[in-house]
Image (cartoon, rainbow, N blue to C red; front, side, top):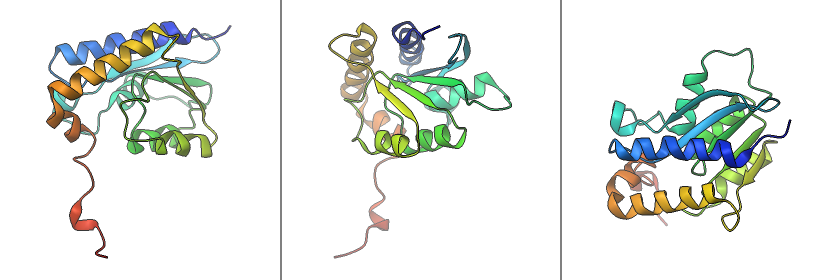
Length: 167
């Protein structure tokens, strides 16, 4: 069986919209079995809903999937390019493939490069051909305009100026 990336990203987008409708950060994720396409876990960012800055969409999907001997035959679908915390978790758990709906609204290419350098097969959906990708990009862009303070908080508040070395 070939995974239906569009359908699984559409499900992740539905979860992102749910979070947005609840006043939260619109980032959703789905963990699927790579052979069958069966959804093993799903979730959305819970910064607002749980007051928890650690439960990003990818973390929520892993939590929903629960304990597994390993995740070596899974694919993570995420509406937004993972942050370093989530990218590290994906590598830590040996998730071999990640599909991203929106790499436009992320800070830069570093986490995609990190994932690829650690052997993860990263697919960024083509925004000209994928309705799901278009939806992911539009929702994140809308949220960034409406709630820039929450967007910034979710990404860790930016670099800590106290940690910068003086020139």
